[in-house]
Image 1 (tube, chains in turn purple, brown):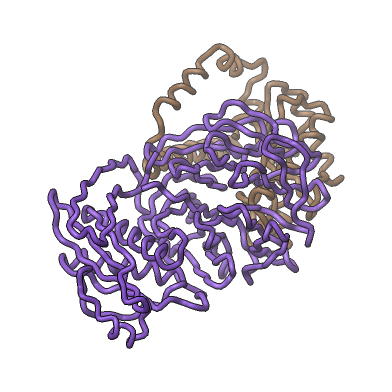
Image 2 (cartoon, one colour; image 1 turned 90 degrees about the vertical axis):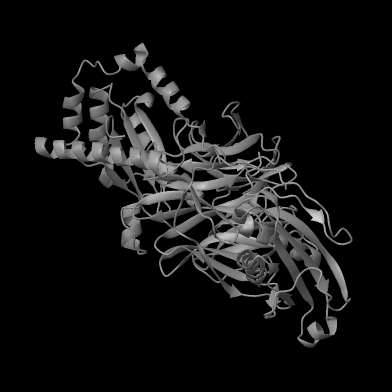
Length: 437
Length: 180
């Protein structure tokens, strides 16, 4: 199911200047209420940022400016670009003055236009120019409604990011997280820039461990509304939710299989916390692994071959993995006495986790081939890591001044951001997948 | 005592009302179908029979609000899941009550302090709840009278980052039928 906020048709712009595109509408049944706004501040930036100018687009003044502003904010926030100021709106078909841009220290600039189309929609065109090559790198045409202005800006930012860095951008993705304020818990979903926050579930009891289905249409999570932890799967488009694990004892730590058909969960129906697999509709419960201690926090490898998890079977909590089809557990972490919350990068090469380092809980990443580990943060209470779908950034929960905040760090540790809400604690982040569009 | 109970009941129903408002008001519509399904199942004979006890449930509910049975918490040392000797008389009293009232059920909610992973702390709270459950069943309570669950670090009694505070959060709470 596609729950993308917009449905846009994209067509290549270069050499096809006057193409007609039709728009297929996707009506959304999102009955969310808008709540506290996440604000993002950049607390660290990359070493070699690309100097880029995003001119105001020509045409419909308000919308043209709004689109360009979203593109600028996205690229700036990534920490990988340095914005060069511009003041004149320029259209995509502007005859580029490359020498002038070079003199201003710009490597890349983006121009565009917004013009009214049929049925109250707008046609947005843009072109990316490479100053060194003195050539256009490419562009697209989008048809959108005025309500899709931000979504279109994110798509343009994704395009620019991918053209220049060779990897997909995550500006059009969404994040889920839990806000606690005044004894009330809200599971919220926002755009990756923190805007458009919507509440999927509000409760007087805690909500933890949200996990996106691979298609981005559902969230699994643990809710304590029944005075005990129960695992639910929540369809975002319809708001319908279903109990998938409510056995005697505790039910927690849902993790989706890469094909979206099963969940690994932790149940205590047979005593201690142990790993089980269950179909996404709650049927077919089967044991995944056995130990005499605690097994929890399962996470599938992206190829579906292994389940990584936390276990105290060796005396202290460490990360292990078992073949998803069953078999011998293999220990992954050895340094230190507290290594928990494994999450694999989308390419399966790296593992983010939380390690206790001299009494401080910090985010670390391990190269699974070399087993080399790097601590990425200098904070005290990091929790719940979650990779961006392009693997570039890890989102996690932390604490600043006694308040729960979300933070993001690039997997090389250089670019850092902090996401917080005005009055409340934010925790339990989960970065959503790429949506097909 | 009776006034207190009345106030508690009124507060409970008010809380339930607020909770109800939140679920339908703040979040998405609940799927009407599944809610109806569940209540339909509960109207069968087995469910009704449970409410016709040979001892008055109100009397049982009153009893657990008095004397030693009104004490419901067992505290644990750091990184420990052993019920300490000082809590043995308390646990024995609850076990005795469960043996004398076989229709009464008890929910043990294990808790952990806030340090570290939420899910791992949920598992640690479960270990504490299981320890108390084991003790109650060894003392004669039936397995199906006792459910051990965990609230992990999610329901702290004290929210400061200090050892005295964390010590209050490393605990099991006991809830009787009608209280959960």
